[in-house]
Amino acid sequence: MATVNAVSVPFQKIAKLLLHNPQQLVPFLPYALRAQVDQQLKDKTPPGPPSLNLSVPGIPQILQLLPGAGAFFTDLEGILQDLARLDFPALLKNTFGLIPDTISFVGQQLGLGLSLLSILDEAAAGKDDITKAVNQGYQAYFFGDGYTTLEGATISPPGTSTANVTNPTLAQVVAELKQQFARKTGEQYARDLITIAVEASGDAVFDLVSRYKTMTDRKDAIGLQEQSWFKGFANLAESTVTSAVEEAAQGVSAFSTNAMIGASLGTFAGVAARKATQNAVLREWEPDPVAAKAS
Image 1 (tube, rainbow, N blue to C red):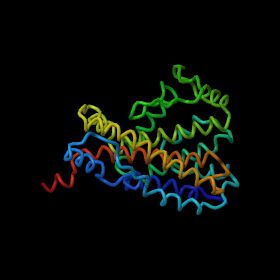
Image 2 (cartoon, rainbow, N blue to C red):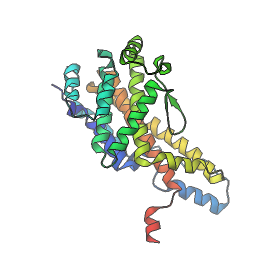
Image 3 (cartoon, rainbow, N blue to C red):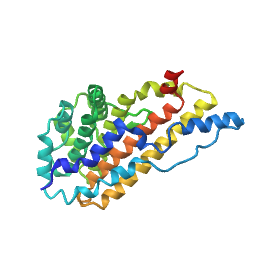
């Protein structure tokens, strides 16, 4: 019989890298971008494209954990019950209450649960901030005009009308979701909710909102170049990691048996890489705390 602990191993690894060793999810070496810009200034050459390194060091660490999952999901309902018995924060329990009790959303609940649990398990002093940020993100997604990401993109429920209803009841939310019963839509909910969880968590952990504003306030050539690289490297990291993890998960029975679990894991890894890379790009032009302390 499968256990939720065994299935959660790759989720836990992703959260550990994001919160404790984020450079492993970044597709460039520390201060490599700063060095390239410094060289441009020295040579008096105009800003150019970055030197790309498509290697994300943490990908092998994640992928090597997938085969160990074994032949799981013979009893999805039993695994979900094991997950529900864990001591989740009120946030996660409330989130479960928003999802219809149907087998089509079992994968979403499990993937979402493992993603959030992994982040909160690895978080230390910032756990309350993360919980608050994710909760606000879900409120905006379900009951507002959609969740707004750091860069201004909006994530809204696929095809639902409850976003425009004032204080919708749980029954209204469930009824609307049941109308969107197709697996493709269920998978989109899974991706959306995990994306919001990791986006909100990353913004809180790395203090990205204020740092991002400082960067976008700059209008000089280097500031504009940093903004371009901020977006480009974040997209590169997310797409590289998401595709690698999802492709690997398709070959593992534990994840291929339920497509939404593989989608959940790939999304979780990809957005984690995105937030780690955003933090890394911002750090490139900020004072080096080690050097500043030594001076």
